[in-house]
Image (cartoon, one colour):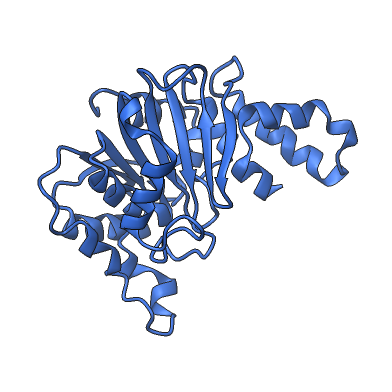
Length: 267
């Protein structure tokens, strides 16, 4: 069920629910919970259509052509999603105004190896994005990444000269337990070289995290060392890592979208 939740659009999840009598019993209860949480977003079903670009890259197109729409480029964390089932995330995104490209790193290496089948480093990933999606046809581009996808979202935002790049609970890969426990293949600093000598960018960099979460406050400091322009946005009472699930439970996830990710200005 987790694999399905990581990939399926709101329309696809709803279609599964309509056919639940045909599904294994073990899937029905978690599917019902997903439907219930999905409906905490827009009351009308968001009509994104999913296209698989590679095994680990999916494009969710909203209603109509690119035109005046914004492209969101999402980078999933270690569980291959943006902290929430993809259908729940998309249910908070207006389908008439946005498309979303979602990437994941199944090796759980924080994109140090890129995305299998879609570029083995940051620049090749950017080239693959450009070759699969006409970025110039969109009004603007924004990047978002959660947890292990946070740093790469910020860096990709700079590479693509995006309007805004948002990390949620991200940290520099040098702090990764997987890097520390590895065989020396990575130091965690490999991504830095791709953005160190870029011409000045206007990309707004945002990092959202819980003020009471030691892991994420440490992660925020590690990112601020290499990205001094990074703006911290804290959730005062949050001591957990999964900020988006917390906001969903509190009934305030819409504020993340309306005030941070999709807003004209952050506030």
